Length: 296
Image (cartoon, rainbow, N blue to C red; front, side, top):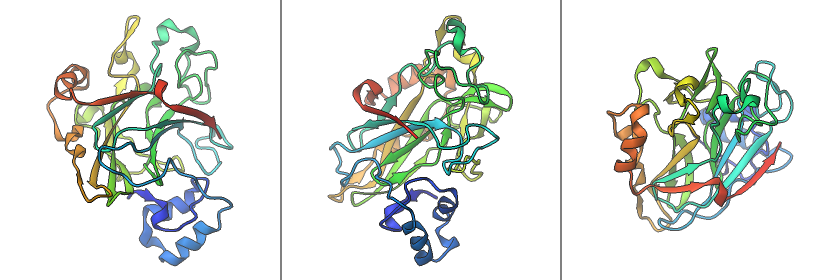
């Protein structure tokens, strides 16, 4: 399943209402007419992330949304952060069909060198003075991707997982396009670089609940990310983006062939070095180049 609200109705909800999203994830659950009536009853429409059709080799829109892992319908998950969801929104303008890496700065600061980060990631405890760009504001930093009028599921990036501080690095979003219209955004299978022992479910819906059918992802304990005063280059938040389908001119989009699930044989710890050689053509963007907003 994937979200593409305008293909269902012309007035998508402004908030990610968990009941409506559950219908969108399974559009056969209700007749389409009833679904449209439900969506059109929302007070205002969601404005999406940019506009226009996708043209290979031209700029398009991509938004990275970081928030805590909670219910976007405004109610608490596990008693944490009830009320409206606070988020950070980064707007990028990548070139369509370029194999793209998006990096967010200062997203893994070694807690040993930043005393205020020692308890970051503990449920209910954010760290206002922490140097870490995400742990300063969020206890379980999580990510979803938007492009024009499509939305991905949510992926956890950091925080407590099974009682251990862990990081889920290397996310790859696959943008599916049909004659220039984005029809969905899905996450690539994320356990290419690890064994079953360090592979875990990591796809969540907008009610903050685990989506069992979603792809899994590799994780590292935070103690593996920190090496003395330095941090492994694997661990700072990076979102890779590829495209598949056809652009507005009918040309095929082929960058999805470069997604990591097509290439096995590396571990997370040696992947960074190998990736520099194998993916020399990756187009990199950082959040210094984009518009950033914080909201609820």
